[in-house]
Length: 313
Image (cartoon, rainbow, N blue to C red):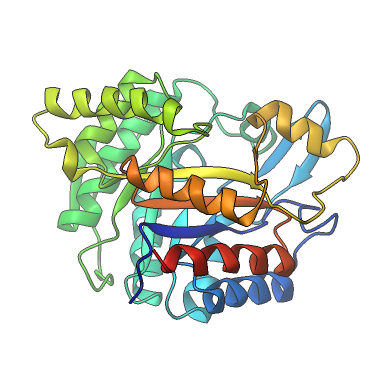
């Protein structure tokens, strides 16, 4: 009997030069996705970025929804999620149609992670406004949520409006669940999460000790909104250097990423990673999304051993 205490997902290497110093093209991306599925992961995750510019060096990124559509058609079991989709890159009503279609193609396996965005160079580089991010997100979620849940929307906000129906409705389950991942301390985004989200996710919280006060704050916001905190399912995005495998030493870029995101968790051994994941499960995390270094087939095989140990209870 499978005794895995929580779901475990894998974040695909969608950034340029992220695959051990190489860029994953479609054949490599498909091979990784299928390897992840065979290894027993519960989910696959895709970032929604356009480029990264860290200390003057730019790197590109796979386009999120094109890749998700292909994965929906070429995988069979794993859930597929956006970690997270930036509403600032998309017309919100069109985004709802895209999510509905991908959920249909996948047979109801999409988790729609949504966020406001934060990395100014990609907004500026692609000619997108980088002002009032939370207000723009609030307009967007007021369009996306009713379209996916009821099939229609009649909304006019400061930055977005939509007066349309979702036709044809394609999702086999009335739309994918919505996940949000506001940064700790972003009270306004947390209030929106309490109102609209089915799942929450957290970034840069690498220990249970960091997680607990954040969870307590979110519980309080849910109660203030008249919502049972237990109805908001909790997930965690964790960036991990794998044990027993060389990490990406791609020039100064790896250090720049660490400076930007904060240092990843150092997986000292398989036992250490297993115990850490179990600790997060004991703290109420139901689904963990692992961004790992190296994000290669060999790295997946290391994590497959972790999954086997988790399944043993």
